[in-house]
Length: 433
Image 1 (cartoon, rainbow, N blue to C red):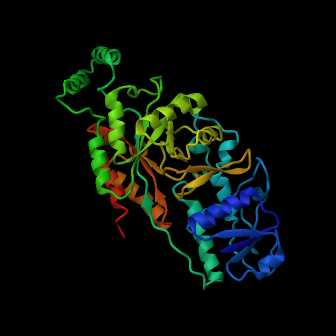
Image 2: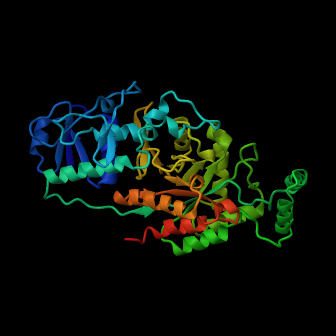
Image 3: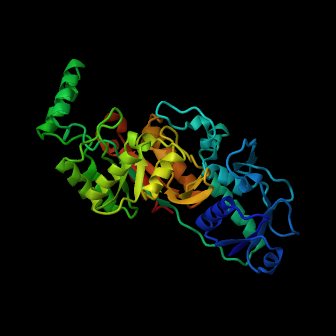
């Protein structure tokens, strides 16, 4: 067990030390403000304060860990060997940066509480992030820092046996629309038909009625392939179905249709099933509650996980709603158009509510790649190299890779050509040395 001496034990301090030490390095940690207890401890120990006690393993602390609420912090990012870091803490410290304060800043999403300009969907943009501005979005810096800390600690305590975690994946399948042509109802089908005619989309009109007359499979109906891939993979997929009402933003199948209910149940036989919260549910607790209840009635079990429509997050309101409804896993933390680490990590973490200064029971599972971001790469070879690059970054710290694909990604549309191969590449990455 690691004993940490500090001048003040705060919720922030306990939160970030447990994330870095226990969840990443698998080292139990406890805290003391008593010098005598610290001296008597005969295993791993360190001091985390403004001044060292003597010649112990010491990390000079930054004030952010002992504050409450938000303050205007002046951040200077520096190079640190193969990565970057901030909150430089001087030569007396055993490591040159306060990685605990820096990690808290990233994991709590401190910057998303500060004033910023949102995009047209009300989302925090990648260009407003510290990671993008200083070119470390492509690295899981929190995990890298944790491993650097662990290495320095082991050098100080060579007899201590540190355990190692393994690289893993959590594939996410997002289903905003289960079928493109089928199960839409008479009025939507007529509207779609007229739209095809007036816009001279004759090929789409032909495909529409080929599907409706059952001569062809619906282009979005790739669920048989998805379940077959699940059967051959030990990594459990989680499939998020949108079941909210038809609106300007959300256009899925009506949840009252038996075929749609049957589809969700059949997928749930092989994969985990979660709720894709509709756009208007994100700001309305009552709508979210109804969608949760509907999904639970379909899967006949308590809903564990959710993911937001358009990957929209409004902190802390969005997460407070999930906690209130006892939905304890979220898969929304990431960027749609950029590959990388929005929270600076590839390790799931508990949401810390800065306003209330508490660690919550909500587990945030940050995603690192969405299929849309790969469309920037024109060739299949470029796409493969991009996927391999982020896999290698995560493997360096034995983290958890969470990619997001859509059901239609595995269809026959030209722009998604080769994406089945990319998904298979990710699944196979677990078996590679």
